[in-house]
Length: 197
Ligand code: SAH
Ligand code: MG
Image (tube, rainbow, N blue to C red; front, top):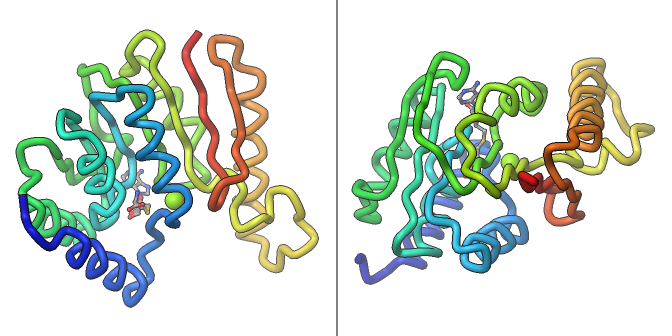
């Protein structure tokens, strides 16, 4: 294990800030990593690696955890590969460079984490649900989209309005899904947690 973990984490966060990479906010990362420890999550499928920040934080929270993470943007994927190496996490973090809709996985995971295109969450859910272990969890980030999902009076562009509508559709989809117990948390940019019944 590298000695200056905190310093390296700081560098990744600075890179994200400088390059407009939308990594998870501290509050959400803290919640997610606590959740992993509490629920003894040992395997994670993440959709939306970006530069590997959340994957690294999850890997550091549990020395036994294995993570598979998917990213479709080449530059971000390459940056993530570099970052995973810096933390010597190649054995526990597997990065896949592809569009999530083009891959087919047979493995099962304790936790599936959606943090990719916000308009596609229903499709992600339907595509990857079969990869969830019995009594596993599906967590989704940015369910509140900067507060616009709760208060859409501040929306200025048509694009954002469309996106917010899709996030609302996803929320309804989760609420109406009787195979899961769902909760919505006002943490960071909003998290949803769906637990398989
Ligand atoms: N989880 C990261 C942040 C992810 S940002 C962290 O907190 O550190 C969202 C990422 O999802 C972007 O880099 C984007 O390229 C990627 N993405 C969006 N749609 C995708 C798809 N269909 N397949 C793979 N990656 C996708
Ligand atoms: Mg996010």
